[in-house]
Length: 210
Image 1 (cartoon, helix red, strand yellow):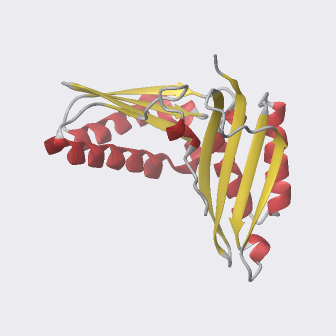
Image 2 (image 1 turned 30 degrees about the vertical axis):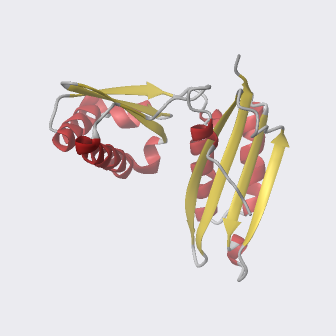
Image 3 (image 1 turned 120 degrees about the vertical axis):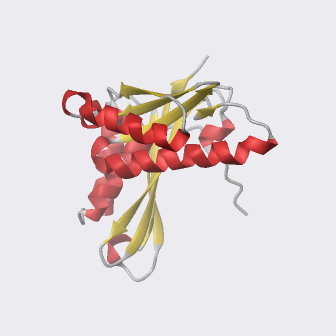
């Protein structure tokens, strides 16, 4: 029986940090969580895949919420003359009901971010590029960018076949059981024409953290 743990949650306080930073009692916890989920959903829906968003960090203080968006295409998020960022700030303030500060961080090397690599593979599959070519090229690009290892798994009706199956590509080493290993994990879903959903999972090993 498989006993699988998310590599990021497993390494919290070792070399990973929480995506939401706040404390709430029993009375407020569910409402705070619902707000965070609504904000992340809104950002993803509004900007979509064109902004290449890696993650959204949320930090609450008594009278202010700080939302940090990590993206590979900061220009798309900021918009012309900062209009996009201002509009996003207004939308988020409506959801939270308190003042919001929006920080936009640009990712210099998207090939080393597992979520962005997974989304890139998913987009290639949706454009009917063969899955073997998509995962091999993405894994090779990640290794060229300086990763110590990468593992890619795709599952579903690959190539439009009747039987679903799982295929994987591993390059370098990916020590999932080593807690001090800096491993990034991300997943995406590809809506393959005529074959339903194909799942994509990516693990990237970026070296050990002292």
